[in-house]
Length: 262
Image 1 (cartoon, rainbow, N blue to C red):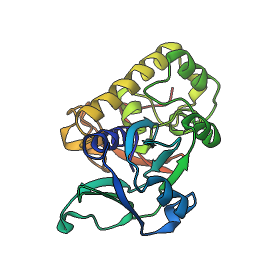
Image 2 (image 1 turned 180 degrees about the vertical axis):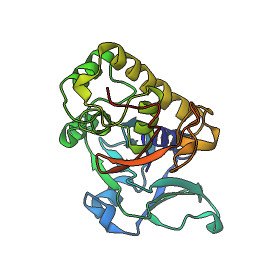
Image 3 (image 1 turned 30 degrees about the horizontal axis):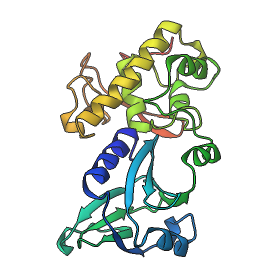
């Protein structure tokens, strides 16, 4: 599932390929994923262009030139963007296709249809409507500490709750907790200030490193758990066996030797 690092990379990809180009046509190939009026989407985009983009959590907002609207993209479990010209390059599950005057196309691909394509006048109003918490790369420590200290839920559930902190999903939650030797079922409000401080810094570092390495697990540091997210794999820290458990309804990978509940 695309998480904050993936969406940041989608933003960079869109910025490098698709800004300031006249959109000649918008094809909606599956309306199930469209959360606004499809005709309004076409009307506002055709003959206009993408001016700039902004990522917040797992959402990508794209300013439309000449009008006071943003295109909103959420990628669900399987979404991504593909810029191409030749038909043999097109992806397999295109849901919305933006065709440019230069004969290139930008495809919004989403196999499982769990994403969202929408329009908004205001990014801030949209974030309030969705009740999203602060972005994981923008939240300050004081706010982060307050969120964790005021919740009795499992720490993994807290840092994955988009209404509390926006951007962290299942995979990076596992990494953040592994790097801090914190069991994902540890009650959030039992963590000491020192542990919360380290958790905050680690969260920031891991997300930035993931972006730096293009969110490719094969490129991640050897001491990360992400490249070893398989039952029975060896923990890169202690050599013990990685175990899969369920936390917050999600498959969770831990090292039982390194991560225990205090």
